[in-house]
Length: 165
Image 1 (cartoon, one colour):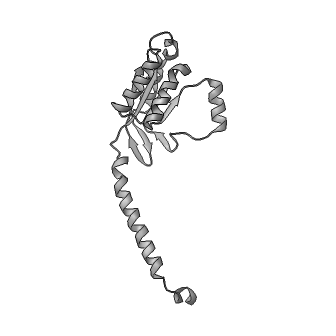
Image 2 (image 1 turned 90 degrees about the vertical axis):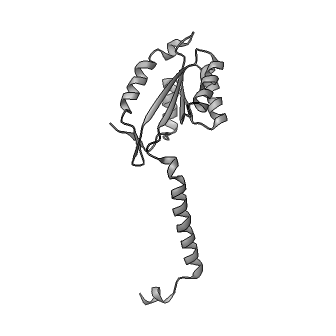
Image 3 (image 1 turned 90 degrees about the horizontal axis):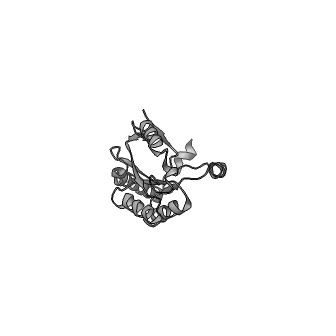
């Protein structure tokens, strides 16, 4: 025990520790508004609800209503509960319209995530808009592709999130 106390702290170690603690306390306050619990998580959902590909979106109302019911109490992330809003848009089975509504969801509605389903011709323009605007996007895929994705990657954008009732 005498050896531990016989070597005093160096001035450099004390200054480094104090500086690190100061930056940690400043940065914690700086990012607090970005994670305020009253912030709504907005999810944009784009599908063909009309036009030749409308069959892809036939079950949308049923599924979206079920998801809304499941998250009506919000999502709990990091001990805080956030309300969830799902905004649906019809791409009218038109790639140009798909890009247009994606841009609208990003610019006007300020969504945090975009989900798009249907054929590649409909989801690729949405993915392009997401990439251009740095908004996370997820496209619908076939069951076989979902199995391959699940087997190769265990990461989810909602990891750490759970719904509350």
